[in-house]
Length: 260
Image (tube, rainbow, N blue to C red):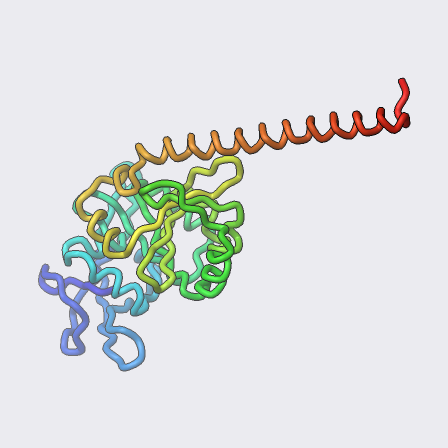
C-alpha cells in the first residue's frame, strides 16, 4: 500500500513512523523503505484485510501518481453485503481503475468486475510488446474510424490471452505512448477496441463519465459498420461462388462432358 493512517491523517511510508494503521482493516502496518522494492506499507498478516491486494511495483506507483492523492487507494463498500475493498484509483467521475501487473485468477477477476461495476483494467503488457509489434505490422489491426477504433481477427497474436474474455474494458500498456483498449463486445468473432495516447486517456478519465470514455455512442455505429462490412464480404463470396459454378457448368457443357 502507498498510504496508511496516522492519527486520522494519510501518510506515506516512513521508517520513523511506528504506529500507522491500515485504512481498511485498522491493523498496524509496517513501513518498508528498502533499496530494492518501492517504499510501501505492509501488514504483518493479510488474513484480516483485503484479499485482492497485491505487491506493488514501480509500474503500479507510476500509474497511480497520475491521479490526485484523494483518488488513490479508495475504500469501496457494499452496503448490502458489507464487503469492502481498496480500489487502486477511483476518479471524481466514479470510474474505478485497477492496475494489474501479475497474474490474476479468473474467479477473482470476475468478482472484482462485479463488485466495482464501472471498472477499467490497466494491464502491464510489457512482456507481450515484441509479439504485439510484430503482428501489428502484419496488419491484423485495422483502424476504421476517426476515433481510432480497431478490430482484429487475431487477438491471440496481439494481446495476452488471459484478458480477451473480460466483461469490462481492458487497456494494455505496452510501455509505449499509445494504449490499446479492447471492448467486452465482439462482432462476428472479431475483437474490437480503441487506441489512444496515455496522456489523452488520463485526461479523459478524470473529466468524463464511464460511458463517455470510449464514446460508446460511436461504438454502436462502429459495430454496425463491422456488421455491414461482414455482410458485404459474405455476399461477395456467395456471388463469386455462384458465378464460378455457372462458369464451370458452361465449360463442361461446351466440352460435351455434362449430360442430363
